[in-house]
Image 1 (tube, rainbow, N blue to C red):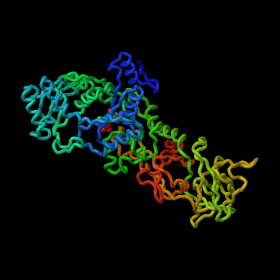
Image 2: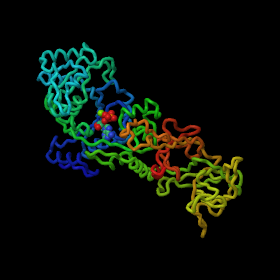
Image 3: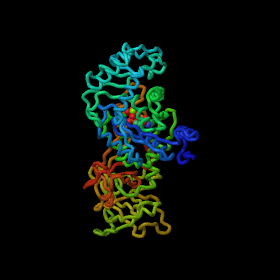
Image 4: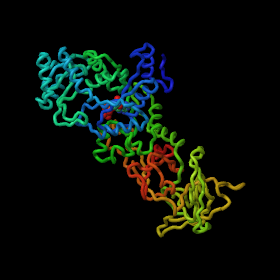
Length: 560
Ligand code: ATP
Ligand code: MG
């Protein structure tokens, strides 16, 4: 039976799996997992891992578990556990009821540690954290054996039991694997397997435990207990692989998954470490984890990104073992491509300038039928009222054209209103300071929807009916940082020094077409000639709706 995947562009991990299947390793089974620590929201880097793990499971008719790696209770909480599940589902993946917690295995993990002790392969150590560090040695020098390394099996078992019973304070004792203090791989120099943590209430196990297993010990065993075949993780765990294998080789467990490492996603103009993202939230640099400027899945969703665009991004960047820094333009291109196809068109005026059509009868309202998408008839059409007073965008008018490329409205010139008439600007009304406050125009009744024979009006601008339009607030988001690698500058600056002061600009008096009173959060629209926008899912609709700009129509960042 061949299950070789031919759906997705291949990568070195898929090639390894193909090889395994050829020799019927794991009886031809493919089982992966996505193992987030619930100490923050998921970000676009996690999406890369999700698409990889769940994608492999889908294509090879295998399974992918969602497993919370919850061994560090003081940083974790249930809000994160729930948000992570929401985000994985929203991205379009399903763990089919295989939702696990590393904490489900605490009892078994304890039992395996006892087994290691009985075999003389683990011991209770009384050195404190600082001493353990000193004894560990360096890359150049071997470490030194702990004075507690040769405790008897009985003493170790007794102390471990008493650690579990809560007899010792935090830091007083740890359990360590007994491997090799002279190993060239520092991870094998008697790594810590258990530490004591009193006074924390674990979101799953409550106060049942006061000793907690370390990640490097927990992970291989959790994988093996779940029958994972390919344990895919990021490159920083490459040097931990010998420890992963050592643990499984030294306990009685049938399954031995293969750990495979790939390089993590780094994205320009943002940070991806959960510690830093937590700081951005806690220090109030952003509104929260779901701030539309955050690289989190929740932020991107609120910003108007689609799951398909994020999955496409993850496919496009590929999976390798080499360090990479992906341009923000790649992500933006994915969302533009997706929205260009699926986003309904609407008209919205961001910087309103009132236009009075002086030769259009007062009180008359003409419903004009406008297509929701220029290329996709299945998206239907809607009616937009036309009347004597409208708004156009301030940027679409110049008294004197700045150059001969200016195709919009100028004093004495003509322009077409999208889906409506050609108008001519007859008079420019200014206030005392010389600011333009209104235009008086006339319309050509013969031009509704099309140009009569021989008539050439090149410019087309968008507009909304002044009495019908809905007043809205529009939030223009830009990159959160103004430096492409804010946390990797070599000049001693901190990443927060590079926060972009213009990452959010709020336009408080915009006018959007009335049909947008029915806008739904989760649907992103193209505001013609302006970009892609969606109703804010948190502050949302109401009398004066708030719209978020998802992305501009073109990449304008470098030119700003
Ligand atoms: P941080 O170091 O910022 O806390 P993490 O890697 O510890 O992040 P986890 O919750 O442990 O976060 O990650 C869950 C899974 O997602 C892991 O398998 C991890 O390798 C993967 N992952 C995390 N960040 C990235 C990234 N930037 N690119 C690809 N995969 C990632
Ligand atoms: Mg981690």
